[in-house]
Image 1 (cartoon, rainbow, N blue to C red):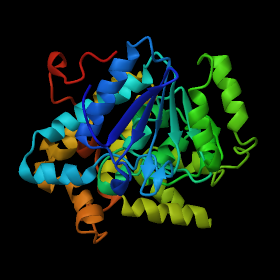
Image 2 (image 1 turned 90 degrees about the horizontal axis):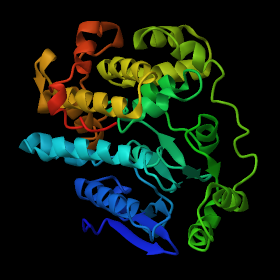
Image 3 (image 1 turned 120 degrees about the vertical axis):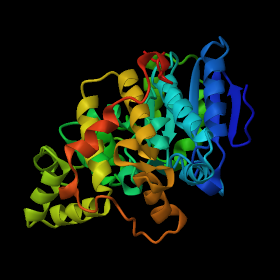
Length: 367
């Protein structure tokens, strides 16, 4: 099994336990972590001594409190600048891990406590049980760094009710646990102070069949926690528009404070990647998970090597977004184009053309 100090594993009572152990980085996924997770799950998948898997994060004070803030975007930036081919490996292996989780034959239980964003959603949305807490903060904020909601985001966001997936994908807004439950991005809510007891109790269960796990969930769940309305009932009206530019126009024409604030948020996101993201979500609504992950692998290659726009690596939209938001922290990315009204289909559609022949696609074996 792949050794990595940032992923702690143990088996107790027929449960395989995984703790993400990179608290200083909010458990952001590194390539060694992805490899350790993949190796662990593949080993436990075929191990008759393991009936179920549970995964949690850790914080500087101990366990829980933070699940996973996403992929290690500082690594993305460094890899681009030094021309490191490991950047390609990162996305191929991360997406393959996402597929493994979604198709895992045994119960996989994600304790989504604290920050659950980007890559953290990728290792939790395929879980049999997705547990949030009152302190969970859930988001797919990739358009803020000139990327798109990957790790299967096209698949699971497009399956949110109505057009809420478009809203979350384009805006990157952080949602609370009640909204996550309402949008089918979580299954139940546990009180934070009961997480350790619930975690330990999994190992004491006589089996991990659906009925037994349902009784376990009932013991710890907070009843009625999902009884909260969406942030705005007009999400479907605005985010069903034909393009991101149309959405911004409609939002800016509204007098509601929510619409004005949402429009202002969208104006800070990458115009190009908002339109790419919208196209992804709408295509993925009619795709299988494997098809979506293959398409996302195509798109992410174009993000760092945007040949049709003659923008490569350090000049790419994604590298510029990471520079502005994470490296230099000037919060002033120079998006190109600068306005969503100036994005054309000719800029967007080549992102959806695979750079590989079908027989050479890095995820060609996913089904």
